[in-house]
Length: 464
Image 1 (cartoon, one colour):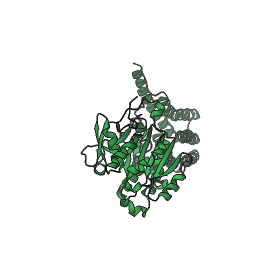
Image 2 (image 1 turned 30 degrees about the vertical axis):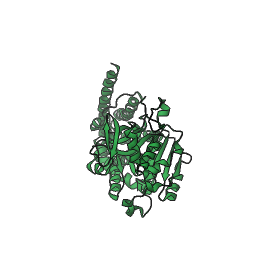
Image 3 (image 1 turned 45 degrees about the vertical axis):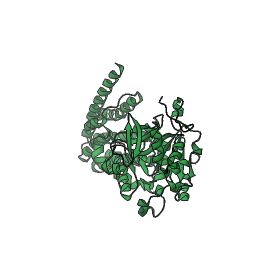
Image 4 (image 1 turned 90 degrees about the vertical axis):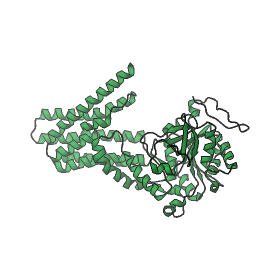
């Protein structure tokens, strides 16, 4: 276990005693939402920028949800400017786990906002801290919170615009040793920290020297050699929001972050360009992702009914529409920071039922077209098995801790759900139900074979 400093005695830092895993992971989060942003004034109308909305959530609610979803037990939100409206929003978020703390001297700087929670975190060895005007995708803070010691999240490869605006971080042997806008270092901090109680003493030292900023406090902490730099996960989205342009970039970046690295060509180039824009438009309505899952399932059932009746054009279009809508539930869950195992389980079950219904609809249509009953039954069973095994093998591999197969590459075989549904849609529109079943069987078999080969090789490599 790494060691990290705790509160000082006589101004000299001393080292923490070795912590248990439970003690080393923060239980409490702090959101600094006390400041005023004149550069966002045209959007806030003079109000707090913590209430500016992104993806249907105010920035302060987004920060609180992020911390709670990351596993923290409770969150303190520091309010100052327009404290009443911000505190009112905070008061509606997870009562009993989230509360507002007023910073009387918030105008001095965000270091004074940090000082306002000293007594509230007195019983904690470590606590997490984020600023409300820094937005992240769900899961972005996981590596920081699991560091087990005081740490700062850093972007090692920011774009030029973010670098010019950001607070740069000097890193030596994985430790942050200096912060400042005047530095020429390539890394910048992301406005997210895990801090020890000693930071409050460092804050007082910085304030005594006339620096009332959070950067001043963490700089003192870093100079004591007590702050590890945790790199932001590659491809992970975040945005510092200080201007209307920043908010625009945040909206674009949030939408683009919904594309998964594992997405195959159908999802990446056909479905996501549609679904992410629909998700962005629906986000302000704050629809339940489970409701969207049910809507996608209903579309699939209607499509199956159309196919069974031999209405290939309507059925095929509805199959593809259901495929697009099926992506929206997960996207909304991530936009609203609500993604969790319960929603994923419901979505998975409905997807499997929907796949079975589509295959059944194609099979009945093929039977009505005069094809051999035995052949249609065999193809329908094989297509259903392929659809079910596709998800089962991925879930089993994850449960066994095996390295994931290259799903993005496998996606080019069209054996994933997006590919299967596109094949079903196109071939249904063409009026070829039996060919659609055959295509599903072949692509599912190829994808399953490649996945099993890769997983088998990975499993053998781990046992050597």
